[in-house]
Length: 466
Image (cartoon, rainbow, N blue to C red):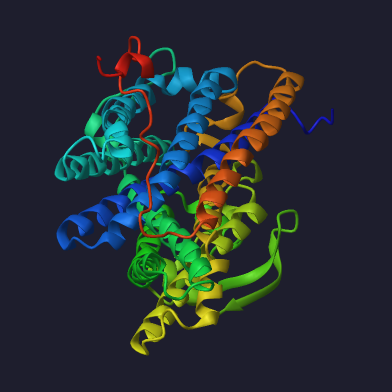
């Protein structure tokens, strides 16, 4: 095994691989749970069957996605103990309770109402069922709340002290939970989840509209998705700008890598594209707009932007990865906003469902939310390097005392199992999406045992006495 594939790098690759699978499922389920709550609420308010039809169509997909999110998330907790035991020991007094709060508030809430939501529509009243759907959506919000609080604390640690054995301990829980970057990350991630769901819904609806323009459920889905794109995409760009300003204040090296600035300068340009060269400490073949970088980051045309040369090479993140992942995220965000604006124009012309080019563009953009989320995650996490707790605990000092071959073997096992299990799950979700919504749409099968324990009566036992 090459020397550069040491245990630290392999552990990082393994964590990146598993969390890349995991992050897309909860993001989709967060947005889809809220979408389902809206659909059921509209059905109760308007009594239009098309909303119930759409609700049942997406509820089947939500059930599968939610299950894959739970399964992929369980693996993450084990990795903290196997590959990152030093990190777990040092941060456990703070991050442990926050993770526990996620289980107590979010997972229990979701688990308590998920069964009613999936299988109880014909067993409880419509209002109680709607309440269960809302509770599941609230549960996904709480899950995002606590997980993002944990991640944000690692990015901008606050409210902590260090005890005699080198552990981070809580001094102010309020400051730890609501650390400086947390509000921005929470808003940015929730909007990303909603946009991801909107573009999946829009893409699926557009696919079916190209085959049947009169499909009422597909028309409703597409209309709602395009409203979401038109309204939320510009808000997301604004939220991203605020997040960027917060990052500039607390993680300036990350911003320097994102922007490709090696030199500290006033009136810094906005580098649109280029090839970052870490050895030469420059961006080759840069296409840039003078002074716009300073204006975006400082809201001053001559504002000063710190360059990466102000940090030692060993304290800098990987510039090419951060530079390009950031541009992928922003570029997709701009395309989302443009598609939303285009849909508004076609809606004004009363051709929202008739424009083939718009429908095909919506299909192409269907996976864009997932790609943008992954690119944003790479920007955030690689940009934090070489630290697990920014500025306080280095990644090299966080890893477990394990040998590289052992990590490589488990990484290989993860690759095989993940592509097999989640590949099958994604295939099944796509198969569900390929079927057009239709009147009389059924939700998940309710032909299940209704007892949580004990012996379920067999058919012969349920026969009426003669």
